[in-house]
Image (cartoon, rainbow, N blue to C red; front, side, top):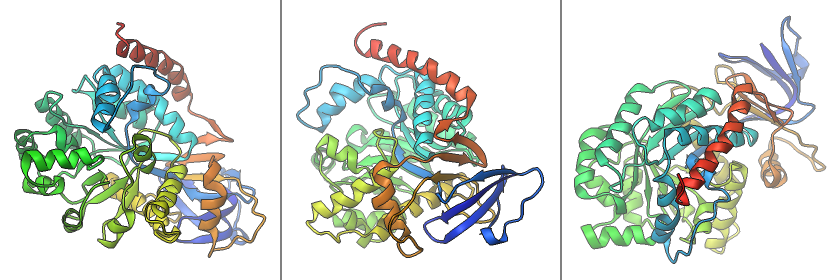
Length: 434
């Protein structure tokens, strides 16, 4: 049994000024004011010293393999989004085998944990398709102990039958509180009607995870080839199932948003990546007005989800030239949405600090010099902590995975040194070596 004491406890719904949380590997067993704390025998005490105790973060869309691209120098002179894919990402992912996939998961997990991210929804791509999702899950959810929801991005640039089989088999065989699957598709522009028909016959009621209208080119391709817009096309093939993840959505129109809302799907925005790729910014307020739940991902860039939430907030104001375009309450709801979604897919309870929930938690040191209370704590978090967010301690399922800013998992640390060698192997392969 572990107990965190002297903490400001906040889970985006409830706040305790000075409290304690008692938990074990099965979940949280007690949450209360410090005035009611009684020390129990055989109990490990973690003193938060007035720090803020939060649920750990969920990253709602990532590309874990991309962490090995950091610092890679290859010829790169794109003029549009398709050329970004052709000149970089499709060159890289084609060279990834299952060993590289495994070690990219080791590297990514180590950074996620240090930034308080304990659940990731990943969208994988690699030249070796079969067994790739198990390789990724074995490092991220196995060695590192993170909760993960995985898929392979089906695309006509690969053997589409292998993509379909990899998704279907992984979903069927992985249904636990640590590991689950979605049915992955790359994007409309890389999937023919024949491929969508094949996917439709297998997909059934599986939620899909797909890039949509990340670039204007994706919508133009769909209109030119199929005389309809992307969401209309997906709906025609009956693959836009409940809980599907529509990623990016920068160029969706009102009719598409109505379909997404009707289907009870989610939109996952990745604003930092959109800025980096110069494709445009999502109209978050429009999604919210249509009643579509919004979540936030990192698209394989920074592992710091706090900065991703900041960028969604600020760019939404800038895009519409309005300092009230979306509110802090809207951002808070995006965090809650991510927790609720992951809880549903993983068939567990994360995201709240109360009895019966998993002890997926983090402590952030903070000494406010202005008043902090229940009414303004999220403002303190957003403006005071998010700009340089770094938790001192992180827990997954009650396990202390980051302690005093350091990883505690010996196996993860040992594998991390090997991961560096596999990053070099990928670089050599991309540059034309063996």
